[in-house]
Image (cartoon, rainbow, N blue to C red):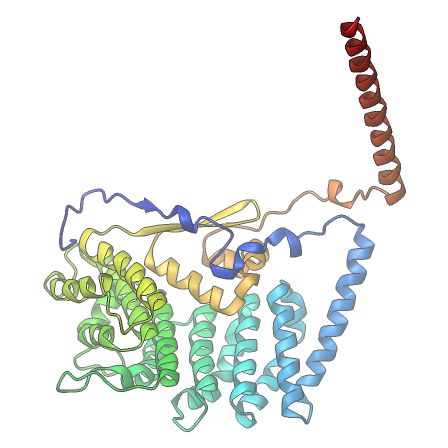
Length: 430
């Protein structure tokens, strides 16, 4: 049960400030822009689509070019196309070509190339659905090796950690796969655990980004597990090195780096949400110790922290503290097109943040059209809008003539009104 307050029927609050198109920069995008065809006939849209796909095919051919800089450019352009368009059939037809090019760049490339290649694999999996398992299986060993390689670039390691988690999440693997990948990810962020004497670990800002990414990746996988499995795994954490303990995760809240603190706090919130599904009084005694740390973070006003960092930290940990103490979860509504996605829990919030990281402004397009994402967020089948009105394009000349006629009518009416007012003024003078 919650540490303080009554459990009963917890009152949820709506975050009206978040009731917009999407998070941060995604608000100005709308699925209607890239989704169903706008004004114009189907032939014109088909020609445009074929031209875009031909251009993408040229970029795919360039993924194996001799120049590393050229390969990076092609990876980014193909990735942008997969972000802006929902084209699962197009990807399915080129799955093996793309996977082979990605694996080659992961093995022989450097930081930026590895990062772009790993991200492209996840953009593929986000549209392939059941077929994502093939991509995950073919690239898993290579990505795992890079994630564990301390000599590899941090950018490449970070993206491989994230891609391993996302690709496994999208391919729907079982508990055994989670334990194996949990070992990889927890080994990465273990560098931010407090030392044996309680001293805070000294980590560079660049390495902290890697650790925060690994924590978020681990948290995403946690959302796929049942309450009972999470409870059993965490109980075995003292003897099972593949699973971090609650004490180790709470120790990350002392990190000097904001990203590590916030991602660790969100991981704990997910654990408590799943744990309370197993038992109302989940980790009651331990939670009382955690509350004191959360209170410090939720009210932190240390001047040595940047003002923006303090604001983000206080907002994040106020929500987490309210959940741990009172079992009140913040609700966020995401509007896209004519639909609304309700984020009413920490697990669904972690999943949404993961896809926002992957798709950026394209999240609205995929929420509307990508059946894989619609299944993840229980949105049902995508809405097919009638195309009759959208395909009837009014000729430009007809629009011009109609506007001219309306302008002429308005001018006549206004001249008539002016004449009547002038006549009335003349009569008053006499």
